[in-house]
Structure formats: structure tokens, C-alpha cells
Image (tube, rainbow, N blue to C red; front, side, top):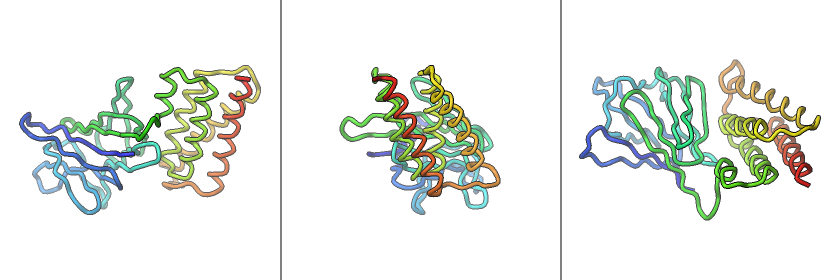
Length: 235
């Protein structure tokens, strides 16, 4: 899988800058008065060709917006951008306020401030597709549930941000595929509870970026229940 950003320079004659996302990439404005927006990765700064005073500067050495490679694509986190960060696909636009995170699993436009627009690209090898793409292609609920369950298992060993993203996808899936069973109601309530707990871990007093073994086991058990529930319903 290849992950990278393409800048959208303000000048029509300028060439877009490509920034690989092989490790963490911070996006911020330099504090030298030039309004220069840079992408910082592995200690190197890349000028994105945009001048925008509405993009935040670093705070205590941390960039306001950070992108990281994850198993399913790219994680985007708003550490403290004064202005909201917007993620736009062909289907919808999602806004990240300070402390929020989301996963990019397909091509997406990332808007920070007024003038900075970046194209985030996820190139997969072979026929691997995101859960959303599989659903759009007409995959059965049981197969979609299995894909999401596998994604949650993988996300639990990756990061809190990735786990939150998959839980959000699971909530949408459960709402779109209701079942008349007590197991469904219990799982739905469990997912909502886990969402609140993950939100607390992401921005509350117990803030952390990774999940311990107990959390991983809990999410693995939930994945098994969801996969089994829809497998039985399809039989």
C-alpha cells in the first residue's frame, strides 16, 4: 500500500508537491512571519507552496495536524488546529475539531485553514478494498460484517484513532442492517459504550494513543460477536 499527499499550490503555474506518508507527517505554519505552510516528516520540512495565516503553528513542538500510516490507509488527527480540518470524498464531508481523528481509506481532499487543500491518496495493491467500497459494490451484510470485524481486530493493535474510526463504521453498519434479536440490541449498546470510552481515551484524562492487551482482547471478542451474528442471520 502506498500513501501520500499532493499539495494544491495557490499559483496555477506551480507544480504540486508530493509528500509520502511512510511515517508521521505534521502540517503547520512556520512562525517566522512568512505564513509558509510546511509538511514535516523524519526531520525534514517540505514547503507546500501555500501561504496561509489561518493554518496554526506548532504548539509545544507538536503540529496542529498530523497524518500517520495505518493498516487501512491514513490516520488524520487534529491536535489543536484553531480552524476545523475538513475531509471530503465524493460521498460526504467530515469535519475534525480539536482532538478528533479519522481514518482515510480512499482518496480524499484535506482542507486546513482557508487556502490549504491537500489530496490524500491511498493506493492499494491487488483487489484490496475498504469496507465502504465493499458495501457500495453490493457485498452481503455477512461479508461486510466480516470485513469490519477483521478491520476492528487489526485496528485494536494499531491505535486509538484507528479503533475509533472502525467503531464509527460499525455504528453506521449496524444502523443500516438492523436485526430482530436480543444479540443485536446487546451488540449495538456495546458498540455505543465502547465509542464513548474510546472518545475518553482519545481526549480525556486517560489520554493515550495505543490500546493495551485488555482492550485488544475486548475488541477482538466484540469482533467475533458481530461476525457470528450476521453469519447466523445469513444462514
